[in-house]
Image (cartoon, rainbow, N blue to C red):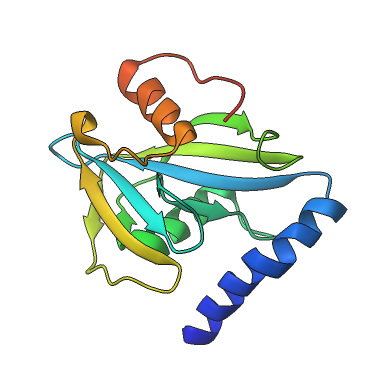
Length: 156
């Protein structure tokens, strides 16, 4: 487990820049998870500023949906019940050339105990009206789209 985590962190620092230069496109997933009270799950990484929707990269041979299910469990102890629902597919060129992000919504889930890791420092549910000031702009826009019922924008 620790070896897998070290590889994951190392790959973000070393391999991700290389992949960005050598691949035409990359695909990631993010999940908008809402509990029975309408609160939204956000995570805080050790290597990126602010609060974000949980998610990560889609591995070779893995479906986006399977990546979403895996990332939710790894990052926040969220076990999806049923299939996550695809909400939108976004171009994320502003941050990483050739990057795309699939946003899924999850409303039915169970929770495993959360323990912070070297990658994820916190995972918490927040009321829509009480999102942390450091919630990223992309995260705020996706939350507004899902909760406001507007169509997804083309860019993250």
